[in-house]
Length: 295
Image 1 (cartoon, rainbow, N blue to C red):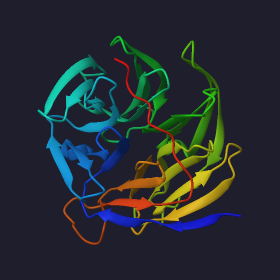
Image 2 (cartoon, rainbow, N blue to C red):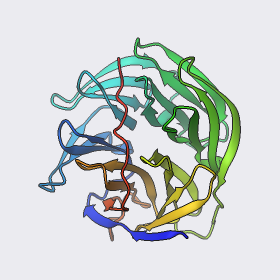
Image 3 (cartoon, rainbow, N blue to C red):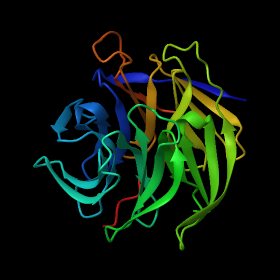
Image 4 (spheres, helix red, strand yellow):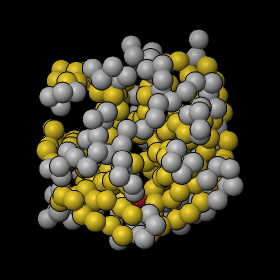
């Protein structure tokens, strides 16, 4: 049986491209980004307040840093962000000599390594890649020929890695060696059918997260949905969102039972309905605490 759920608008933010939600229990709030506006937000669900800090580059993704602040995938590489001062400190460049390439979604693994990918700003096929930032500041390309590197997370036992190249049409699964930090045996777990008749002109997988039961929650951009799949690729739940441009998901709240959902505004000059808002659903399952960058 597929469970049907509905998300509620929590913040009418009108983000141009909301992305990368991550709960920080240290501050009792949710960080999320508006990529093209160079904004990092911190939303306090108790007060309803949302603080915005602007940086000097597009920000594709953020993750918590064990020493404080955030690690980020920015336009031209990896950086540390200080939310209190608004300072960005570069760690390592990634394809910085190519202005047509920017970094996109990312997440930390259980050993504190930050994985994030790239994409072409004109969505050119195969122009992107997936990279890893190690705690010592070194980087490695994991694989290339990616179009839009997007959602990434790992199974609870650290034996599988789930990954989305949005234009490839689904969720791929790899065998993952957490000690050697290698991936192998890529194969398709979930097919996501494209719907060119959607308001976005397409339907693709976007950001994802794994819950405490090991199941995968993925934002379906263009469909106005978040879907939950089990580890065999079977659909188990659908969350309806009132706008089509659903971009990413993360569990938050003190008990990690709130599923936060970011969205985008299809036309940046349009501020109608709830597009670009931050939504929340309480699906009756718990998430996992986010991994932190160890560097």
